Amino acid sequence: MHQRISSFLLIFALTLTCGAGHAETTSEAAATAPKPFLPVPNPSQLKWHRAEYRMFIHFGMKTFYPSNNHMGSGKEDPKKFNPHRFDAKQWVEAAKAGGFEGLVFTTKHHDGFCNWPTDTTTHSVKAAPWKDGQGDLVKELIDACRQGGITFGIYVSILDHHFNRFGSKQYSNYSDFYLAQIRELSTRYGPFDEYWFDGFESKNVKVDYQKLSDLIRETQPNAVVYDSGTLVKYLPDRCLSWPNRHGGVGSEQNYRREIDGQMRWYPNEPSVILQGNWFHNGRPITSLERIQHAYLTTVGHSVTPLLNIAPNQEGLIDESTVDRLTEFKAWVDRLHDNDLAQKPGVKITADQLREPGEQFQPANAIDGDSETYYASNDQVTDVTLEINLGKVQEVAGFILQEPIALGQRVNGYQLECWHNGRWEKVFAGQKIGYKRIILEGRASARGKEFPATDRVRLKITGALACPLISAIQVIGAME
Image 1: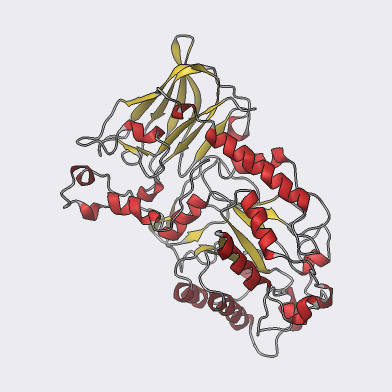
Image 2: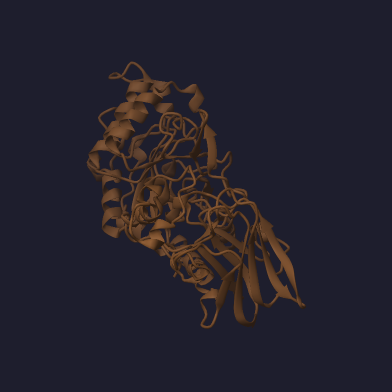
């Protein structure tokens, strides 16, 4: 099973071990630890990276007005909202069946209908026949996530067609109205893990983003913020970026962005439709091959995506969807479990070693432990790591990882296989980041076929700081 971090406290371990402020320790290994190469992710961002993928759930009035248009008008009748079999635990179990670390839920979409009993408007679950107006999807879902051991995030549309059409008796301007909604969500349900602010047409909406950022900082200090470009200047230490499209992203993901003259950690968070048109519209979940492609062009390109699933009008995730997600997780597990570098007798060497001490040796890159890593000496930027597999075997691809708690360093690399008596370059790239998956014939390795080999080399050239590698996996032949 590929590795996930089981405790949030572990997020700090690598940084504390490797921080420059611990040079005075008596441990020889700790005294030689590489210093962080700034910027580095804050704990919330690091937790987001390690999530690998989260489930996006679109559910609301548009579920009961199914079409190919997900926008909504704000005129939808709450009397139609009646998911009479809604089961938050079923949603959580579906997420876990697919290997999702958590989910992000549309508490309010563009139509303005609120999936919690807000005091800001009557256009909410309080006006619906579901549970006689006493229901609260947000509470049931966040409680189920906690019980199920997965994370929870909230999507709150900045755009609100209902407010635009009908205004509010309580609020003279939309900014105060919206801030009141965010305050309710941020204070009623305890801590959660992510805010997702849809930036669609947000430039045309007057919201006090400074007040919004202050509210987030005050009420949810540990939540990461997908900001659609609206909040990063106010919350520059914990934001995620809009990658300028839905779907997969390019292979060379650079987390380092200059914002207001300072280099910040600002990775992309893509979102991908797997079912419906965001909301359920009668269409089944997409094919396993398409989900694999979405995975390889997001997780495999070193970012954490939201993969969208749409519950039906009954308030359940379709059984066929759960079956497909279960298939998908089995494929992800096979991909990671099929590591030739984990076989007995495999050896790894490097042309550059960090001295003194044993803590940063090449073996750390193939030990299956994401908390250990190989490091060169500080002034070195070019290194070569060679893995001897012991015998010639079919190779389907590679998985590479950097310990990003110490920054994103690799700025050029190539993979080579020993073939026909010489080293043959089989792949080249620029960025690695949290996790880079290179699978023959798929995504960024389309048209490529890797030779059978008994030796593999990773050559890193021109790193921005001494290279650190926490994993090199050599994927054996897949079914």
